[in-house]
Image (cartoon, rainbow, N blue to C red; front, top):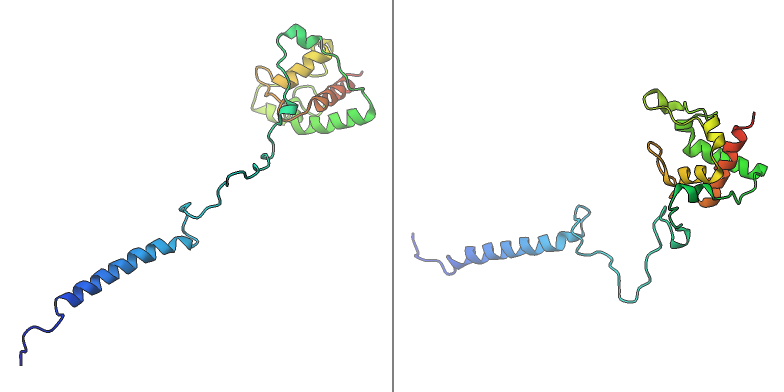
Length: 173
C-alpha cells in the first residue's frame, strides 16, 4: 500500500550528503598532523627578539676573512711566519695527505692516484717548485691555479704554512 510522501524524504538524503561532505573537508584539514603531511602549516618559526641560530658547519666567520693578495709580487713578498718545527711539518704532512696527495702523489712528484685519467699535477719537489718563494706557494694553495682548486676555505693561514713547511721538507735532498 502506498502512503504517499514520507516526511523528510527529500531533505534527509540532502542533509546526510552535506554532513558527509563537511566531515570529509574537516577531516582533511585535521589530517595535517599525520606523518605523510609536509605542508609547513605547523612549523617552528622565528619569533620576535629570538636569538639567531648558530652558524652552519663549514662556514667561514668574518674574523677568518683575509684581504686578497693583489699581485704576484705581493704574494712573493709574503714571509712564512710559522717555524718549520717537527710539529708543524707533521701537521703539514697530515693536511697534505688529506688535500694534496690525490693529485700531487705521496712523494710530491705530481703523479697522484687520479692522474692516470687526468692531467699530471705540478712536481712539488722539482727545481721550479724549489725556486718558488714561500709566498708564491702560499698564494697557490690559497687561491688555486689553472687546474688546482683553491683551499682558502678549507685551510687556515697557519695550516697553509704548515703544508709549505712539509713541502720544503720533501724538497730536501
